[in-house]
Length: 195
Image 1 (cartoon, helix red, strand yellow):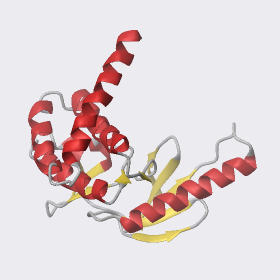
Image 2 (cartoon, helix red, strand yellow):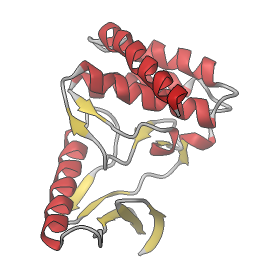
Image 3 (cartoon, helix red, strand yellow):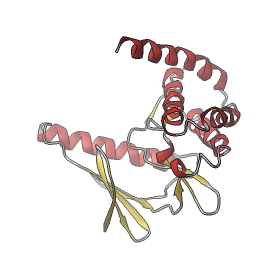
């Protein structure tokens, strides 16, 4: 197996046509608590992948610390959206379908999306995902995406966000979520002023 990525919570390996995501122990946590947290988070991520209403990795296996799924070929959206800001419409459509099922991605950045060679857009990395019917949580998901556009794609930020909104408005709660987003952003601005 070849290591292809390393994050705060897990190491990602590629094994031929499969991806193996292994959560790593944290030395600063009590061993029993660490094992329980890893097991719970791994199980939650596997359930989330299984329940996806949008294109995503196919789940193959799960144990106490490891999720095995399909390897998805293609380019990360972070590397292509500056030339194709219209991709953000599909991102909005996908997110609306997640939110309508009360599924929160939790780390919605362009680094966690793949554009396959056939043009299909796929979300990946559900390590911080969770279930919630709260409008606030859905707004924060969008806020994270907006921050990703602002920091990494500032040249096309406004255009891409307009496309995103066009896609997201298909959600049955879009207006409520977008209204709450204004409050989330005001809190962020207030917090940044104080630092």
